[in-house]
Amino acid sequence: MNLQRMPLVLIPIPPDFINSLRSARRVAVLTGAGVSAESGVPTFREAQTGLWAQFEPTDLATPQAFERDPQTVWEWYAWRRELVARAEPNPGHLALAALETSLNRRGAHFTLITQNVDGLHQRAGSQNVVELHGNLSQTKCSREDRVVESWPPTRRVPPPCPHCGALLRPDVVWFGEALPREALAAAERAANESDIFISVGTSGVVEPAASLPFAALEHGAIVVEINPEATPLTPLAAHVLTGPSGAVLPDLVKAVWPEG
Ligand code: APR
Image (cartoon, rainbow, N blue to C red; front, side):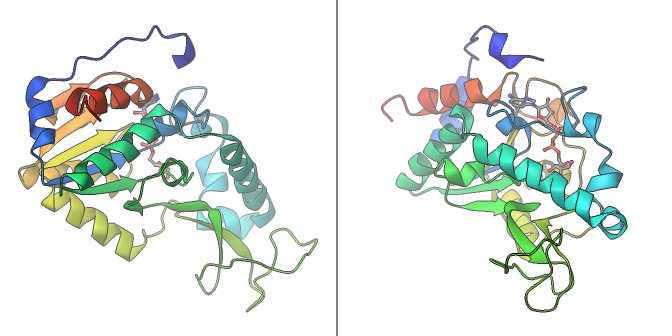
């Protein structure tokens, strides 16, 4: 789906959603790869363009793949790191940072839970970001599981850990691996305590992140979805804003706080 050629369609924002956001005390947002699509960062499951349409996840994003062929895995993540480094936050990222600022200024609590490892939310100015799947710009020791900031120049790929000599690896969560405990606990708390939960640009098929909107629903939150496509959450969401987040989110912030 080529979003660049899509005519700019202003998505009507439901008035009761606008009012509930204005009076909200605790807002949580969950984002997925779709929020970075308009920055030129491929999503995972988009047919043809998605990473998993081009590459086999079991060859690149599992501990077994790294065991089998660490060089290929390291180089693939280096390629993604370069791709993300060339990308810029888009109006969707910027609108989420503005939403946080506006809510905080009115004494409300805001949490941005992301499955993305691209760091574009932080580059857009978002503060309270919970990274569920790690961050591409970080590297860790595959044995000691601790972040390694720097290592001496070497021809070895991946480079060895300067502390213990084991291989270094990207600090991201691979299939079959547990999520960082603190991040998951913070995300579950934010979902359970939210009065509004907004799910943006995620297909909602990867657990445990996919369960967060349903937990928020069970705890009585108003759950909203922003996605050009339907997902398992769509039938249960109180409001569904069908469109690209780079267009919908700025419209939403403008509609809620026209005066900024
Ligand atoms: N705006 C909003 N949503 C969009 C846009 C856009 N411009 N473009 C695509 N989308 C939607 C798609 O319709 C789809 O529902 O974004 C979603 C992307 O889904 P996935 O590619 O499955 O990405 P995500 O949900 O983030 O994947 C979850 O799976 O592969 C693992 O660890 C990886 O964090 C990732 C996790």
